Length: 66
Image 1 (cartoon, rainbow, N blue to C red):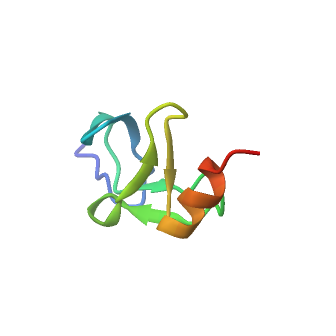
Image 2: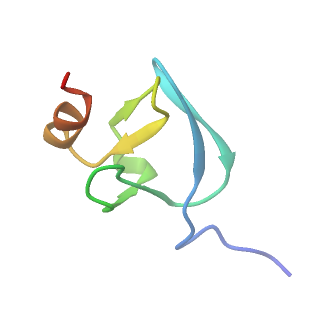
């Protein structure tokens, strides 16, 4: 049986200039909002935290010193 990666979360390893797919899927979840972020639209993540963010504002909020 052929498995589709549609509607499955991917597992990624985030690096400074990109990411590597560890487990196939079509999206990741934003660490702050829980929103689905299609891999084709993923632009913001934390290398240290290994987390994805849906928008620049959410990334800034999550990465701001407290």
